Image (cartoon, rainbow, N blue to C red; front, side, top):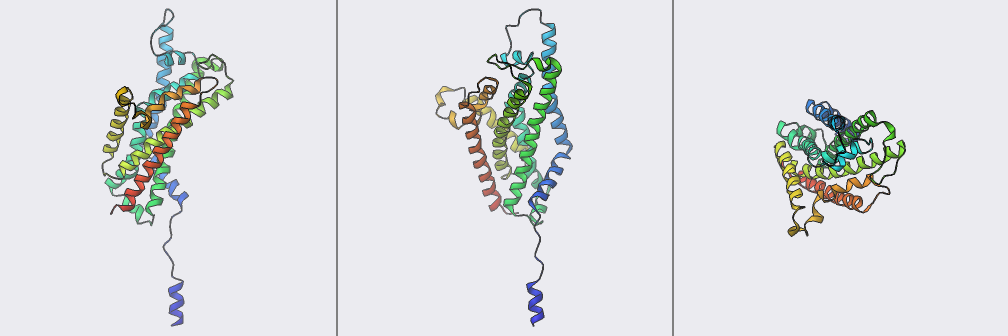
Length: 288
């Protein structure tokens, strides 16, 4: 009887996979997907295409240009502005769709293919599952933004060298300080996209169709941009995430105005908390 009791006490318990191990496995799964590699390749080409277009336009311009977008005009001869201009243009649509695609694949995509159930049988708790998925999406989003910035810096240096590093205020920056300015823009844009990804994860936890997540984010981005143009609903503007996206250009000024950037950062953090909370609430109560 004593031997049986001792055996029952020392029976092995089910081992739980470590969080870092799950995170590494998630990253391998994300970055080995052909779709992910294609998306990263296309995002990396965006600053290059912009730079080539600006170089061609500058070469064929016979006089002082007085038309076109002022940001792109500044980027034509400024290695500092080009990567930030590329991020600004992509932030309006391309990068949010990329974030939504990653979040849709993280939960609803795996649920549709039946692979999400294997995570729960690992055994992996639902809170840990959401943590791993959120970290994987966040890493992919940061990689996307960083890749665009790096390609923008390389393209800008090839076009203009290190002599054209000046702010919109007219001051000239050293190369390390210019890199710091670009890094600040990368981090700020990344947080904005994390907010979109958090909302997309909440939607992804409620459906088995990844395309629905992408369409929802696309619709939300377009509707928010339209509402920001309507003064009749100005009471709603402080709650819309894209309200502060134009503030990213403030990093190109010297000194940098912090009001708009901080306001956008706080708004994005609120979206992250709300989105992840809704995603966890749905996952913790969902059957199967």
